[in-house]
Length: 482
Image (tube, rainbow, N blue to C red; front, side, top):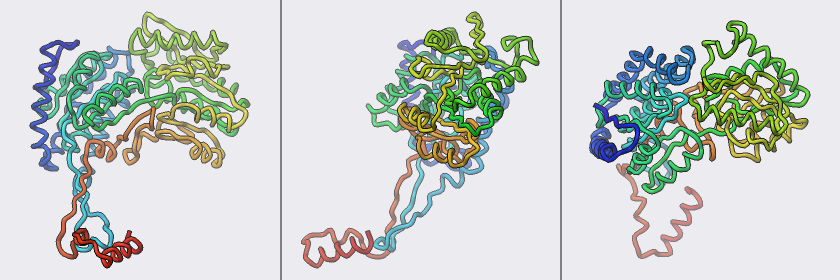
């Protein structure tokens, strides 16, 4: 059985964390020699458990924040099943040691890249996609041959309970264990000297995780966030922009790390874009329900605290001179905020200083592309950047002139859908990459191995006395082989 503790850390909970950690420290040695078939079997068990609990996941997601069923299927179930399938298809190749090229002076020596498990891992997951962002990193840990201790968010208790049930039913605690609780539980877990920590969340907590990991020189993967911009130039099709940005922005009520955060739109396109967003909201929700709030296809902000935060960002923007162009309705009793587009947003408004993580889309106009690029480049590097343009040179300019974890041209978020591409941020928006092979690498030490079979000993010339003849030989090697 997997260890489960009370919501807040207490003495018994602390003892349990230390006990399970010690247990996994022992088992990780055994896992170094785990076979392909053993890892595949574990991945298959995880997949089967998620599929068997699909209805429970759907019901729990609705109970936590009224997430629509299709969004659960697409945003929670599909990524996990897809990650397992991709890992199972490719794991034989990933774990196989492979020879690499060598310099001429190493003739007779095999040089090998040997993937080995880092060992014990900690996965701290957020509340916005609890199943996806707990189990997809776990897929990478299992594929690499690591043990894992999981900490889901306390903000989605129903989903966290389902995760707990799945882990208990599927794994032994010596290999995978789940701990529920608040930040005090995370703090206790972070005191342990793990071999790798995988954290998904915001940059501020990411700094705390990185500082804790530094005490043990533990490697980290930090999947963070930030304000992912959309640049819309004068050539873009505003109906296409509105359709695709709305799909990404209002999914999960805007609570997605790669959701478009704000739009830098050419001044000639702003009104057309606003009209297109109005049409999208009408077609998506209002034609099928009396209001967005009554629609079963629209979720909620996760809790009162986050509702108040997003609502206050809207209020501050309006006080600073912005106005509501689309939507704007709110209901604090239900943590409801309608899909909202703001125009005339001052660049120094509070909503432009922090990640919104809600269904609110500020518009900022520009007249010259360099102005838009300067705005992006003077701020922390985003997790994602999106550009809409019919002109290839413009898209190329944005691609080369900016830095972001990932970029999509003429759409949003789809760069994260290909398991052959790495996913992750840069600097403030993340450290390390995940997705497919790149996630496997995060939990793996790529060990360098050299096997001398025959030929000259490359260390032979390092035996004193160092003669003039030896110096000439070394200089010759520097010129010809280095």
